[in-house]
Length: 77
Image (cartoon, rainbow, N blue to C red; front, side, top):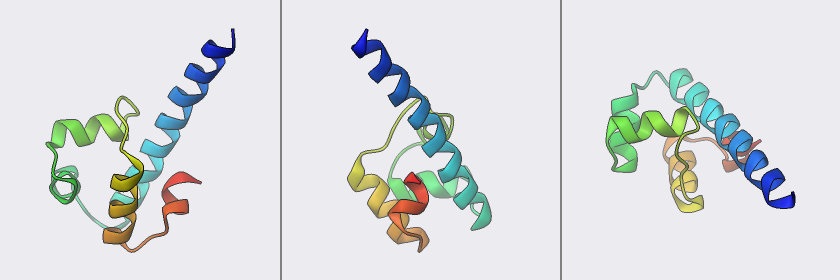
């Protein structure tokens, strides 16, 4: 039962973080392709991050926040 709760929580957080990343990207006026280039991944992979179907490592999130000039907590809040 506990494992199901963890999986559900993680899936929900992945979607929430993806939505925040998308909001910041759009506020910066960047395309998904430009954001993917910053992370060194394909646009398809990046799109999956925004949709909550894939996740970034902590280091990738830190790099993205630094590159975009926002705090890590902005992406994770």
